[in-house]
Length: 129
Image (cartoon, rainbow, N blue to C red; front, side):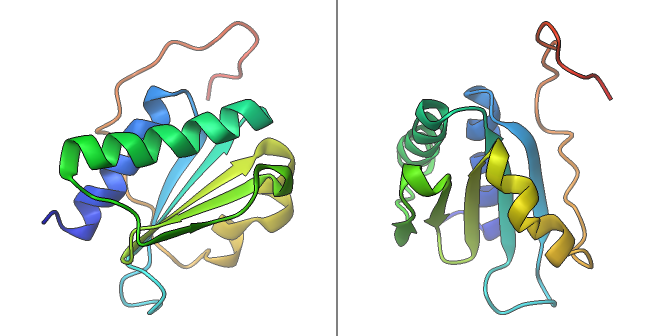
């Protein structure tokens, strides 16, 4: 069984593969008993939101044999949650990410470096930081 950091990184990788944006992993160990890690990502449309959710769930089961403990949310709410017990994945539509601002709410949580994600060229019109 993979550890929680491996699950979090794998979720982030699968989100990246389907072009989710603003991927972030918050390390909640020692800060919260809710989970060890939150994985946050943004989808650009409702179909993309559903696709990111499906991709993470399907690929985690294929690659690691990990099925979520539960999931919640309706695409119409623009926020889907996948719960792997020690890792909780939050998939937001871009309209809702700023509203809920989980990265600000958990501002004291260290960010896990995403250096394991492949470099992806910027899409036309995409901001490059």
